[in-house]
Every structure is written in structure tokens, then in C-alpha cells.
Length: 258
Ligand SMILES: [Zn+2]
Image (cartoon, rainbow, N blue to C red; front, top):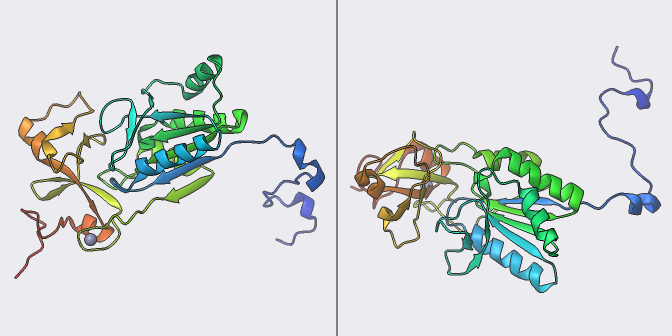
């Protein structure tokens, strides 16, 4: 029998009674956690700095955090040349302690801007949600959703699970075919790599100088030749899946132009 006799005891009803409108002011105000995600070079850092700029102009006080930036120093730098100092979040950093320290120095923290949020640990994402819920801090996270294998980064995964708002950032980053670019392929000599360390940050900003790769995982040794040839390329899903990096690239996966 599946007939429901009493709505109050419906075990499939997950909705709680809520306060009446006049009593809503008694409900604690909470911050929101927002995750803006997109492929490399899609303008996430630029958007992060723009949001910080606007909030600061409106009198709110924020803290800029970065898990680790492509430039390797504690700053948020956008590809179009704007750079701001940021607080580096290390693997063992408790983000709540960072904010507490700012409070102790008499600094308000109305919001947090977190760049490279994909590299956060699940625990650090949970700390951010705690700051939103318990300290009313608005949290703006920016990062890449998936790694070079198209699997979610740990930090991105936890943000997808917990964030109040998810927003894809798609500032016309296109695959070589013209379709929206969604995947960061790791490419060596024209071949899309499918295995390797998850974290491997190559600085693609330096005018194609792929040799300026910033190795993060020091546990793994690579030949300098390998370091010099690995690069990232944003591809659409189809070309990521097929491993085709476009007509200008050499090696397997090359589009055959008759
Ligand atoms: Zn494509």
C-alpha cells in the first residue's frame, strides 16, 4: 500500500516547516559560497580581481587567497596584466585560522576571494563553508573543474558538492575547431597525455615558452626534455576525447589536411 494518509508522517517528505515571514529576521544571516569554474585561460583570475575591486569600492573588506598561483608567488595574477597580492594557502593551512588572524589584527573580513580553488583540499572547502555559515563571510572561489584526464580536482569536487552557487566562466575560450573549449589537455609532442600526476602546472602565459613549466610535484623527477615539451591546450570534449590537438600541431592526432 502506498497511499499516504497523513502528510505529516510522509517519510519521503524532506522539507521542513519554515518560519513565517515576520519571524525570518530571527534566522541567522549566512554568507554564500560561490564557485566560478572554467578551463585554463578563460579569465577566472581576471573575474576574481574584478569582483574584489567592485566589493572593495563598495566598502566591503576582503581577503585574497590563492592555493598556488601559476606565477608561483602569493598573488593573483590575470593574463591581462593585473596582479594583486594574496595570502598563500598551503596544504596544511586552516582557512578559518587565516581569517581569525585577520580579525585579531582588527581587520574585517566580509568576503574571501580564493583563486586556484581546485587545489584546495576537501577539508579546506569545508572550512570555507563553515566561515560562510557561522561567520557570514561570502566566499568566491575560482578554479578549474577537471584535470588533464577530465576528472574532477579534489577541491573542485567538494565545491560542486557544497557551494551555494556554481557558475561556469566561459569567456569565449574555444577549441581549435571553434567549439567551446572545456577540457585542459596535457600535450607532449602533439600527443594528448592520459596518465601522469594530477598536479603539474605549466606556465602557458610566457608567449608559448613551454619550457617555463613550474613543477609542483617534486616527488617525481622528469627529464628536462619532457619538461620542455609538455604544454596544456584547451579542447572541446570531442577533440579531447579523440586526442586531436589541431592542424598546427605535429605528431599523432594531427588533423589530416589533404
Ligand atoms: Zn574541438
